[in-house]
Image 1 (cartoon, each protein chain N blue to C red):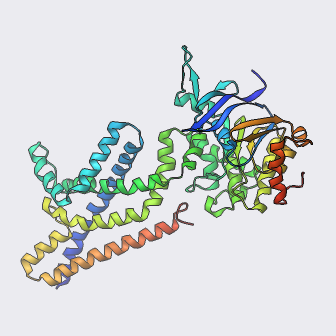
Image 2 (image 1 turned 180 degrees about the horizontal axis):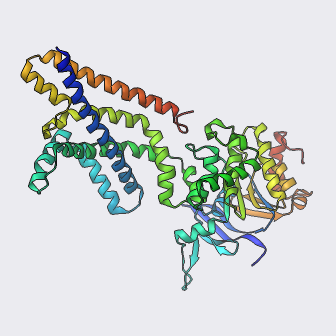
Image 3 (image 1 turned 90 degrees about the vertical axis):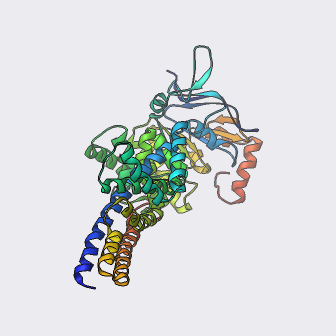
Amino acid sequence: MSDNAISVQHLVKRFGETTVLDDISLEIPRGQVSCLIGPSGSGKSTLLRCMAFLEEATDGSIFIEGAPLGFVYDGAGKRQRQSATELRKVRSQIGMVFQQFNLWPHMTALGNVSAALRRVRKLSRAEAEEKAMVQLRKVGLENRAGHYPSQLSGGQQQRVAIARSLALEPKIMLFDEPTSALDPELTGEVLNVMRGLASEGMTMVVVTHEIGFAATVGNQISFLDQGKLLFTDAPSKVFAKPRHPRLEQFLDTYLDRGASTLV
Amino acid sequence: MSWKLFNLLLEASLMTIFVSSVSILIGLFLAILLSAANLSGIRPLQWFAKFFISFFRGTPLLVQLLLLYNLLPVIGVQIPSLVTAIIGLSICTAAYQAENLRGGFEGVPTGLVESADMAGFTPVQTFFHIRVPIALRLTLPALINEAILILKASSLVSVVGLIELTRMAQNLVASTFMPLEIYASAGLIYLVINLVVATAGRQLERRLPGVGGK
């Protein structure tokens, strides 16, 4: 098997006439943090969602740990949908963290984290809850286990969502703008949990507007603009001057807001 | 009006409560199945659900009950009037509850289903563990309203020969000639039952964690 956890090959995504992803090829190395950055509407979230098959690409392929995701080619080379069982199997290697947390509102934090362990992994309630508590402890929320999502802050909800994904022991974690819905003072706690994960060697793909996080934690940065992948490189190269003109322009908008100390 | 008469009305109201609550629960179960049919993406099931809902919402309950009452013996089914009443009420309320639930199911945020997909839930597991509980919470006020409507509509089941609150009131009026007192008492009993249901419903709404609640 190759060293890449995810391999994206000539991915195209169109919504009607609009091309959202234009022939994207990208390798996500195992055990590293890959960040996708770019302006709004550049397609970075769509690309990430394709990596979980939450969006169906119009053309191209994605491989997760060597296995095709979503579509397979039959003997005649015709592209067709993978079976639901097969899709669930490939997806079981991926954890996804959403911008809007997407915790199930009718379950407690513990319920959210243990639900799939019980229903999908068929563990007993006691075993599932024990494993869930380990994950809640890891994100620092063991004392909030009995709280419902509506009783938690945004940052706490996102940490529960991370714990929920981790409980299923994925090989890859996808983060779709995990701090964009949070008040600035709450982003830190979520980023800290993510830093911890990165230091444990988790393969992570992070769509983010936190350029500082991308620069300090990321091993690889991909810059998307208008559906095209302009470049992928190590942060030291990406942010070194002279920079790609489009990236320079993008970073300027951060400077304008006085948000970055990087530049 | 004597306490004895009032007690007879109270006893009959137990039948009203029994028939209504059993029908509401069976109706809710059927409504969830109809919603599943609607969401299944399987055309014939969707057609069946649509037809079922349009038919039972589009015809009067009284006509449905009379039809059922006269149809069953023709097709050789002999069942007690209590069962006939429950079948009639359940089917009718199922159609209304399914229509109420439709809004609830549409209100379940896509993201919650996506996170269930990512957690490895099958569509059936997602339906029962995620969609149904959330849809029920979103539609709780409408479902309580439907429960109250059915409690009142249960007065119609007297046409299939079941003695519940309204029928008992009619019988008592026939033998005592005190229509005002008796019908006023019956109305009062309905009102009290429904106030209890409405209050319980509001308490439930307030206490249920999740959507709409805290």
